[in-house]
Picture (cartoon, rainbow over the protein chains, first blue to last red):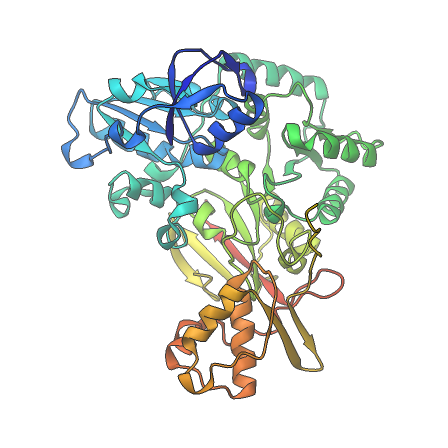
Amino acid sequence: MVIVELLVDVSIYKGMKLARGNEYIMSGAVKKQLLRIYPGSLIQTKNFNDFYKKFDISSVKDGDSIFMFRSGGIGDVIFMLPIIKYLKKNFKVKITVATSPMYSCVLENNPLIDRVIQMPFAIEELINNKYHLMFEGLIEDVPEKSQRLNAFDLFLDHAGIDYTKVNFEDKLPKISLSREVISKVDEEFLNLKIDSSAKRIGVQVEASSPIRTFPLHKVAVVIRRLLKEKHCVFAFGGKRQLRLGEYLKDMFIEETNFISLISEERTLEESIAYVKKLDVMVAPDSSFVHIAGAMGIPIVGLYGCFPSLLKMKYYRNAIGLDCNVVCSPSFQHGHSPCSRGIPSPCFSVISEEDILAAINHWLINKPISLTYPKFNTFINGELSDSVFNII
Amino acid sequence: MAKKKKKKTSLVRKINDQYVVELEKNVARIIQQYLTPLDQRMDMLFEKMQNIKANIIVCMNVLEKKKILVRDEFFEEFRAYQELEGGGVDGEGRMDGNVVISVYNQED
């Protein structure tokens, strides 16, 4: 993180404005991006470490103010929630949380958070809060822990909280939404006039990174098969998937039960409200696994280069389909495709039938252990049975 | 004008049960750490690659087949992967392997 002073007024994503003459804290990547768009717009002033007062759980007292931040993605923002719950349960502290403007809706209606602000944030946030907890780079830069611990445990550990003593219920994240958005989506949903007997399945069509994106041709087959079974399929995605959303809409143009929620106008908060309407969410290793987990919706997660265990272990009614191939888990971060090919070749081992069997497990309680000779089961986040232990 | 780099692709190939392994230099250095001083010669091509672990595994198999002397730690470290061969990707983007399913916290 760096501290910079703005030399001109600038606008960044989602209309957020940074004012000239003020000092802001931002990541090195955002600083570079700003300098690309607004050359000469800022200068680095102070040393971030001189202001960062690392949170110390052993000295927290009632009345303390704690400031935590992680820019994104959605999963990482959600991973902070059990810490907030733990702190509020055990101390009377004031908690401010900062994240990227794109993801702040995940936090804004959380009754446990006193204040949500957006990143980059003013230097005063560090000055005015007693303790700071930064989660930037935690998963990416600490492989010895992040490749071993579930993300929720990793975040708790980073806060100095003994994750082994936090119970399962308290590790479950929860997202609260605004009444306005819930009402809007309720109304929209009624207008869709979906047959009440139809099961509703959400599909995240693409991950935020190509290496974690499940092959589209298989996604399309799964959607087609679900529609044939008279289920209703909702396609989820963000602004980056607009073209893909159009492509799928065109592909299923005659299917009234195919509903694409991917549009320029659709907000993340609305998409989250739609997740609550689902019977099952199918998603690659990306945002909607965590959104469904936080909304208590059954999940089928499709995992390649990271083990599902590290992300899904504490979600209720979740199935992780992991690729057991020679290079998995490769723990490849970033936004590059797999060096072995596009789409990631490991996903070749997960068939459409595997996904449909997992979906049907949640929809009609069809046993899956007969289909899969290799499986693990977890109860309350603890491994209870393992035929082939993926750990 | 900067010279355009030639894009290279396949890293590990299995042809008639023989492995052809192409490794990045720093990966080869990792392997070399585990070779005994008696045979430090690496009969491999060097090429850019990302997936270090997978290629080390395949490389280990190559070393075994070639009966190159390798220190025990090497095998110990990658023991879990010894059974995994055939890490290559075929022309249709498929890999050998299987699905492992994990059911997390199913409610009654």
